[in-house]
Image 1 (tube, rainbow, N blue to C red):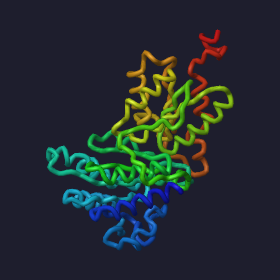
Image 2 (image 1 turned 180 degrees about the horizontal axis):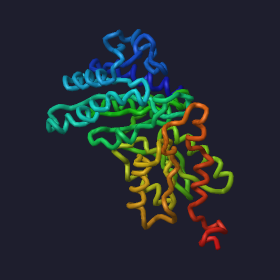
Image 3 (image 1 turned 135 degrees about the vertical axis):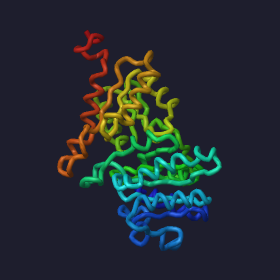
Image 4 (image 1 turned 90 degrees about the vertical axis):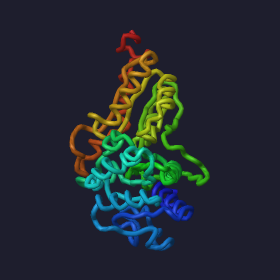
Length: 329
């Protein structure tokens, strides 16, 4: 099924399994959401379980905070990535801090779903990559799927969590298809090795996983084995899986479509450089979006990192078979 269908199924199964789960946001009821992720839920479960709200993101999240404080499990949708910013104060000051502020007396079983990223030809405010804001905030779990399977399993795990989860959904992947096993369990806070390889590790997440897989296919035709690690959980970060992967190859590139400065990619690069220093054959590279506002639709293909940019970075990693490096000479 598509990722959109997998997310819809996860929401439906969660609502059916737990009477405390409610889904709400702008246009998620009768319309089924801008991307139809909530299609049919209001008709199936009633408007008390899936309902529309006013166009007020801070009000949406504030209402969800009150519900979560009183034992419910709200799942709210921010219609587009940058549209979530009016609610950012609520997320940072209350969603992330209430459990700590109350010494655990109040839990926050709240999921904030945010469609993120480019690749759909969206205009300003519709294609941001805002993951660094949330990953930088202690108290939030931040996850992003790259496959329909993870979309289903991670969303079910997020809804079941007693703590707040920011669930970032790559818009570009809503129509990507894959097998979905509804019995499979995903653990929040874990990465996965999406592709085995022996020469270089590409660390990435979300929509960029598909770019890494494309680059790995091209590299394989040139005799180079690329390992791909899908971070999945931006916070907490799965150091064990990522660092083991890098140590197995000795080379690493971090790939993400968000701007590179002060980014999740920068944090990953720093962690790998610090903790794998004695295992590295070359500096850890980054391939990211540019440090400019997201490009207009006709130019987004220049902005988004692609397989060619990733392969160019891989080629700089001091290969023994490269006559232009000291090792090759």
